[in-house]
Image (cartoon, rainbow, N blue to C red; front, side):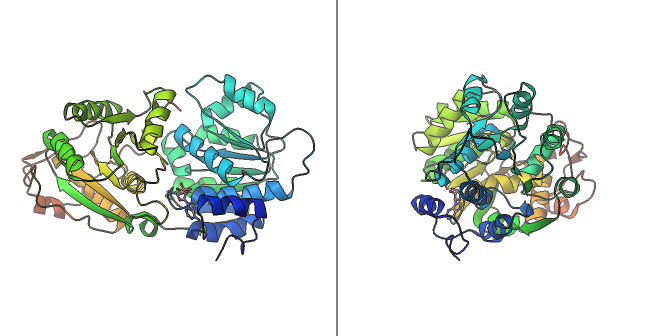
Length: 423
Ligand code: AMP
């Protein structure tokens, strides 16, 4: 299957060739024909599968083929996405795929002054990519009219739900014209998402690219059992012994991310952190340096890293294991994007073994354990209760008896309790 066979307009084909896209990815092959027919779509796929082009190409195709070229540009397509980094990346993709179409896009997000964003809106765009808070804000201030809207995309819907954006999303949806094409993308399909999509989407088609197929099977994974106080040493050791050019390190907390950067600096490893407390400029600069190879190590929290698309990213290190298993799939999906293969290494201390079990259950794989390394923690003496966590405290269990004990775990710990982050 080629993009030409899907019937995509010539200027878009030309841009795709320049991007080096030879064939559609599975999500594109499945979604594009449905979307070209004008149907609503529920796409189950994560970033890294080519999701942006799966919705971006048909939107550009429709706008290009129906463009009268007359009058002021009106917002015809809206993409709502949870984080600014993701919004920027989607905007860049529209710019790349649409560069021969004359169709304009702009990106709006919170945490920065609105002046430049409102200037771009005043000049006029057909495609608007936005995070929910700033979108509602500018809509309420009268800078954005969605009355001509024809396409709406909700991207990373599960994440928006987790991040407490769902009320904003519902408010936005309520202001859209009833006649529109709706595209809904989510990496996972918790019940809440299924219910929401039934409410928001009309007669929709569902396209599923399973995460296991897309990510967990493609990425080479391994876990290191290591005591918490040895994690930094292990990290330094791995960075020094691995020849990966770009290493993305995940930290569960912002404070933790800063601390890791400081400790790496002591070992003369140049790293930067990105998280919600960093200014937008600092985040963008760190990401830019990381993308163009000036910075080898980027330490990120989950929200900041969501959707980061770095071509050469070959190694992801989970410094902390996430307590929500789906997050693990998102994290390791930062490497092994499109057709590339990648490596994801996880550190697991005594407190995190239950998280590892949840992850393995979700991905239906056992993550191989690296038995030999300088900081092995083969018999953690005490499993302490992590902060903010309901998991019961378990003392002095051997790892084998812990493996048998699958009870007493609060599966969805913290899942919906995360407070709304800054956009
Ligand atoms: P996404 O899931 O949209 O974040 O895309 C993941 C990565 O795959 C990005 O680097 C895209 O540029 C790349 N990509 C998307 N579609 C294709 C394609 N058909 N062929 C090659 N690379 C692609």
